[in-house]
Length: 326
Ligand code: ATP
Image 1 (cartoon, rainbow, N blue to C red):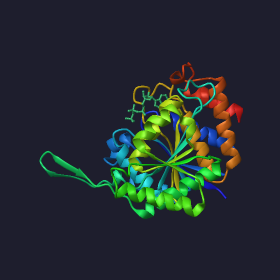
Image 2: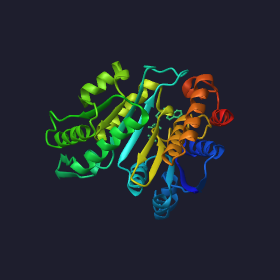
Image 3: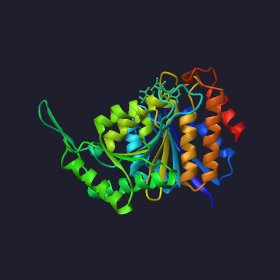
Image 4: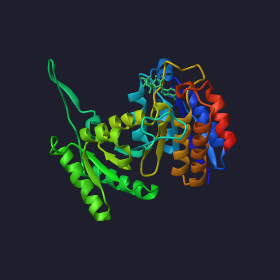
């Protein structure tokens, strides 16, 4: 069966790293049909709308979407796209690779972040001049869904440690529910787990990343902690992510548009190629996904490398090297 992939390069280096990842997807044995769509600041400049309705519909219909990055319009592109694909889990692996100068080479962990609610529910107001409020939404349904996903992800991918991050000592009602629900899921599965206050976790993950496997987080905590973990493994150019829903998913690098290097052909395509590997695995092409990941790991170890990793290679050189290894 042919899987339809919607490809949205977006802005900045998205225009460079997404085509690179598509070249890699075209080089593996997978029955994929690519449909190109555009979104982001440059589309808003032309049409006034960063995410045209037609692209939303295509994302809903496609089997998966590969997205690059959007600039100022990011919130108006990424959040609706995540919603359109019904994504409730944001999966962000942070793994150190041989050959890359990582602060902590022993890092191999995955943040599983709830991405439909929490403080990103969009319920903010200015109730009086100079006084603003935000409503943090935590539901049992979404907490159960993310905990089940996180424990399943750990079991399927061989991670022994599962940690539930929370701040239930302060946010007693909302994170109380998040924690209680995750604990009930663990009990039902008979799974071992730890819990950690998210602030203490931030320190401990820097000092001892080897103590963590899968970390299940509420929305904002997952966003912040996964960027922090990016620092442990050598920077944003290496971190892929998946936004997974029940029947659809979107894959994107964790980094943004990197305007400082956009247009120079030197962006590191690894994060996007690794996102493409996650896409392959999501569609059931497990062997191909593994092969792509192994090829990226080989290139990271032996070069060529882009300037962010201390090399002089271009995006194209790195992509060619990955394809050669495939
Ligand atoms: P945005 O506003 O779109 O989030 P930003 O520059 O604030 O852009 P990122 O795009 O995530 O945030 O980039 C942060 C830093 O990391 C920049 O210095 C950028 O050059 C670097 N960087 C990010 N992604 C890559 C990449 N793929 N290759 C090389 N450097 C990268």
